[in-house]
Amino acid sequence: MSNILRYIAIFGLVAIGLLTGCAGKNTLKVNKSRLASWFHSPVETKPQENEVDLSEKAMRFFIHGRYLSAQDVFQKVKDRYPFSPYASLAELRLADCKFYLKNYEEAILLYKEFEKNHPTNEAVPYVIFQEGSCYYRLMATPDRDQTYTHKLIDTYRRLLERFPNSPFGYEARIRIAEARERLAQHEIAVARWYLHTRQWPQARNRLETVLDLYPDTKATVEAERLLRKMPQERETETWWRRLIPVI
Image (cartoon, rainbow, N blue to C red; front, side, top):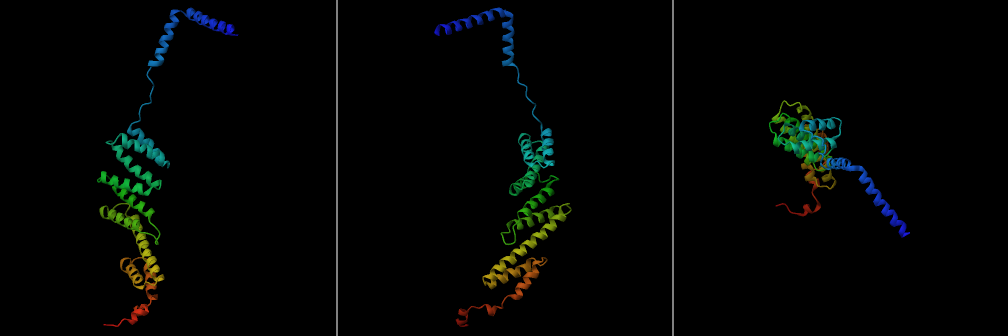
């Protein structure tokens, strides 16, 4: 068996030598040049998209509601061409993408950054309105913390003061009224808790706050009703207070 393998190996070497010899010098030259072309030919690369192409591509994604894809491309524009006019568009639309993806806190930061970087840009009224829109969607129910409600009012008031003729003014006023109603209802909710725990002075203070600060809200009707139902001060005295002599 070992002799058979040896013969096969020798035959293979002889065959290779014959084939090489038959090919001739010209064939070898062709093969060498072909190999050289394989190793040294330039790789064809697709030309890099410029800021215009990228912006148009991103806007197509944005218009069709593909916000994740849009924000990726807008980010490329912002990173690659920071001094291009298209960079400011990318900044604005990145904030919008966050907004439509319901990442409101991230959107707020980007809207604020845009206003800071481009204070005279014609899109600033829209940016302030959108910042308020984020707070509008973050507002909690009346029984919860109302930090975002206060921020909404502050943001929209700033919009109305700086741009009184803005097309966003009408909606801003409606939302301010809604936010004030929410704050008044919050005071009612807290007052109810004080009433439930028989803390009459604290409850009265909250209800009177509704009448003083939010007289234009529907919550005033409930505040007045609860105030009428509250016991008088003499009825709220605990038994041990009657034992203390009046000086």
